[in-house]
Image (tube, rainbow, N blue to C red; front, side, top):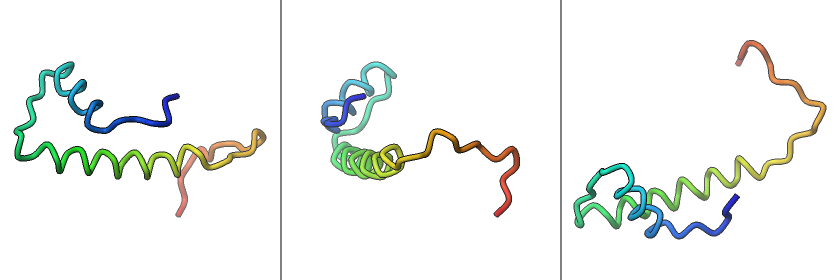
Length: 61
């Protein structure tokens, strides 16, 4: 998995692939938000989970 993602390049590529134009005035905000999402996702995906743990069949808060 790629750890060092360039948010601006990723947004540009995905915008073209998805045929989803992003107005130039919104692009800096989209890039900033995507960088924040990447940081949050990294903290979740890097969290160590023991091999013997089992997922709960029902969520109970």
